[in-house]
Amino acid sequence: MVIDARTGEVLHARNADTRLHPASLTKMMTLYIAFEAIEHGEISLDSLVTISKKAASEPPSKLGLRPGQKIKLRYLIRGAAVKSANDAATAIGEAIEGSEAAFARRMNRTAKALGMSRTTFRNAHGLTEEGHLSTARDMTTLGRHLFYDYPEYYNLFSRQTTDAGIRTVSNTNRRFLSSYRGADGIKTGYTRAAGFNLVASAERGGERIIATVFGGRSSAARNAQVAELLDLGFQRAPSRVAVRKPAKPVYVAGADGPDAAGRTSRASMALTASPRPPRRPIPEPPETLLAAVAESVETALEAAHAELATGAMADAAPKANVPTISPRPRPEGLMVAAASTAVDPTPPSIPTMTTAPADTGQEVVTRLSSSGGRHWGINVGRYGSRYKAERVLLKTALQELGTLDLALRKVVQNRRGFEANFVGMTEEEAALACRRLQSHGTECITIGPRS
Image: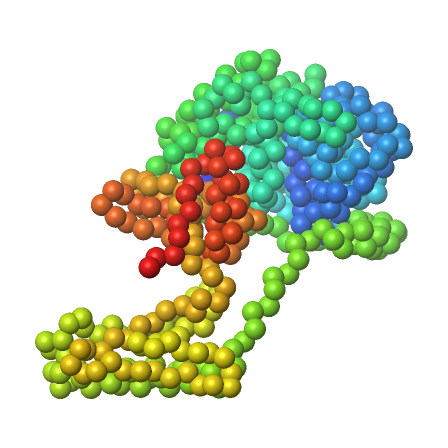
């Protein structure tokens, strides 16, 4: 199965709806539900999970967890995503739903909500079990949802190695990741009954392709077949196409069973420090100040229009700049109209406007208040087309949600190309964002306020 991930269009399919053993591709769903549970406050990355005897007794591949051991959820997620650890997957399911059976029921509800119509899960890890079946089409659908629904976690699948708490583990997909240009995930799977399975995703030049293979004869043969399918996808996919993200399923609170309410309540109490704190409120300016400023701007406009009508400004230089006041998505300060003298916004004094003498012309300046200091930005490169610059801005914004959350994306065209900028930041925010991007190998320079 091969699709264009941007639109979901099927580029190639053969036996895509045949129900087969998914093996550890199952862990894609386990991780999807873990990300969902974190997002909605059921559990946090730093929640300590107590390992059960059942989880510890799962056969390899495994981390080697011990019964009674306590380990943070983030390490279990890494172990399941990178090492494909069965003990970690079972522990994740038990931590979220109380038992693996309850977790399997949630997996099936989620699969149905995602449109995976021919998939049935029986466990969290994918080891062979009667009735535990899926299809190439359904697993491709799940892979696309992982990429678009939880982009902040997607980098897990491209890590060659990772710290899983008790030891550093290597990626089961590392050979394919290192050999195929643009590959960045997603998940391998193998059991004797299933053969060698792989859902792979790769991005080149703004195009993203997902390919799925079930039942490979060996890991090398599987990797070669997936590489051919991805090549086919890149050949058939259009260079430019509008991205149509899949619809995220409606969230349904997790645990079922008689003790569901109590378990959910305990999880909520343990997570009070996990969600991101709310933004600090921006105080509203006094109504008297707003009225005074509006009156001053209106007076200046009337004077400018009067002079234009009588031709008094025909020979004056420079010509008057007529202010425009445009709403911004995140106002950081009050729009203040001023002339040659500054406006003092400190109550109870009322701002005034001084008009320059008629023989020198009148200049009306509209500027942002200096409060907040959000006049800085960053540049993440120059590109040959607006489309490419916009794609880089979107990808960078997803990569650095924490530091670029309040920034605005802006493409500036000049004779050398299209500059990809983030604007509307403080100096500290711009410097921090650049440091973080540069640590990942992304080109970045700060942009100061213009004089």
